[in-house]
Amino acid sequence: MNIATAGHVSLEQAKSLVEFLENDQQDKADALIAEINTPNNSELFAEIGKLTRQLHDSLNNFQLDSRLNDLAKADIPDAKERLNYVITRTEEAANKTMDVVESIFPVIDDLSEQVQNVAPSWDKLMNNKIELPEFKELCVDIDTLLTTTGKETQHIHGLMTDVLMAQDFQDLTGQVIRKVIDLVHEVEESLITILTACGISAEQPNGEKSVSPKVGDNLVEGPIVNTENRNDVVEDQDDVDDLLSSLGF
Amino acid sequence: MKVLVVDDFSTMRRIVKNLLRDLGFTNIQEADDGSTALPMLQGGDFDFVVTDWNMPGMQGIDLLKAIRADSSLAHIPVLLITAEAKKEQIIMAAQAGVNGYIVKPFTAGTLKTKIDKIFERLA
Image: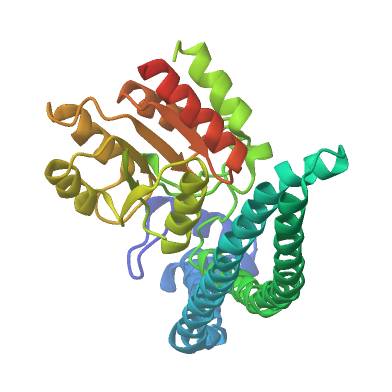
């Protein structure tokens, strides 16, 4: 519709006015006069109203997201600390376990060597082919072996308990990681709220698959945790071997 | 035989060292990334390199390329032990001249098989 400017009557409007008056339509004539005096800006007003409402809602949303401020200033640094704790605890556990295992290796090797040393004489004894001096010597060796075995198995048992206790990290790190997952979820929700407030759709364009995670130089990505949903990765060593042999390596 | 184990995680270096020792390798040295490993290789008479891929500083794949590009080191067999599992990366490593590719998590048995195969081929 034509928006007439106040004070400027168009020929069309003048003709209509005359027509209304001639037909004794005083109401319509008055309305037309009013329209000529006050240009009809109702569409423009409606548009401004809509924009004002949107602006108001957006500002409200940002106020609601003052939680974002806490997330950025407190929760996320706290989560970083928590994840560092996980690294420390798991590293400690791995080292504690390896300390014990490495201390057991030589003990087992020593026992195994002693067993190998008595084996030939023992075989002779079992086949009734042993001479008295060798028998006496064997008795001494077996005695030493029994004493060492008794002592070392008890020692190893204690060390195995240390290995067992080193696994207690799993409970603690599990709790910490679960808390960080909750935080990541909350951040995700807040980001979606912001995107929505800014009028950006958080949904992927229809039909498109979800975006792949960011990779570094040489495509480095670290361990793949969802191999079943990916077709660009191998699942296990057999897949690696098959791929390499298919390439002629 | 002198072996260089390259990984940024000391626990993984320790695991690999223990496994290698079980396989009869006693002369083992360590580096925590490619840029520390390369000068060690250039300075010493290493016979075998076992390396991770994803490390800060110089990555394992770049170390492999540097080894192949250096005529005094090019002959050294390189085994990658890595969590990197993209087919494209495995092909990249093969083209760069890797001698073996083990994907983490791995077993002592896998390590033995791959090492046996590497030295069988070189023999």
